[in-house]
Length: 377
Image (cartoon, rainbow, N blue to C red; front, side, top):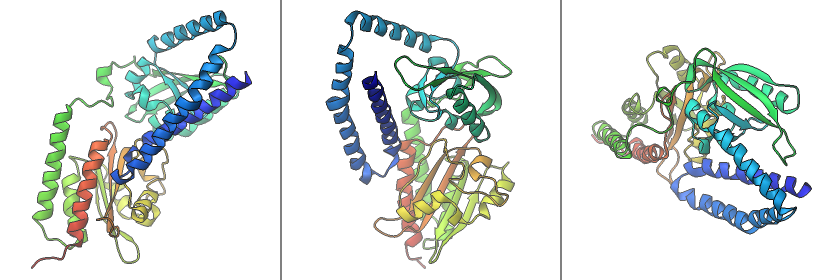
């Protein structure tokens, strides 16, 4: 049993590292070979150590008992996946281990994407702390719990989450089984839930990106260059609405960053004033982009303070209901960072994709060239 527990912990560590590698796909293209080397190392680790270890554990014990156990586990897995109620299996830190078919339709999150990520990342910011606390209480044996939460993509719909402790066979730690149900209505059909898979075809999305790049190029060529604030203002006008709900532009001066442009949805005028009055030095994502010159692409950002707080003390990401963001440094490597452009998407809008991040990276270099070019008479 000790060897089985040790193998389980090693496998859990491997799953966490794989999740980190998935998140690292947003690094610049020049840094991708490092990520690829790490992925190959992890594959070698599985083939050379974890798989032989698993075969050794599988071969121990009476073969008949092992065969019955495997059949029982397969049956339980099938029941878990096919039960018509949204169910998730998480650990005491709310990290998702399994998500059944009904839960993927209900939450609009693919099981492969959710696995290894905290379930709280798919909830509204205001509900995350309470859910973590209740999950930890259930895991340590304080009894079943139930609370009302809200999915980040559907903040107006209350969801009843019921948590109960579960000890998976052969595992040393207690897991938490989470059952999700609408608090005041039936389970919505997949057609009513905005899923992560867009309805447009890949060709249509590519054409939309090309139209955006064309509009950005036109805006840069049709106006004066060499004026960083003016260039960013024209670029923000192109991106606002059609590509992002919020556009925040910061220019790197001789001593510090300065905020020049903030474009927000029409119903967020007060929030826009708070963001405009914010010191960019108080935004960790902006500071990191300005120092390191690397793009950040967090989906459902876990840290509510990643973009700092407004003048009222409220986290900007929470107030703007940000579900996805792009923080792009404006630089013509190996030159200095001339500014930082941050884009928010909020509510049920589809998260930024890798293709969109790559297109924005290309446009950021064009912006940097226009900002640094000498103004022609």
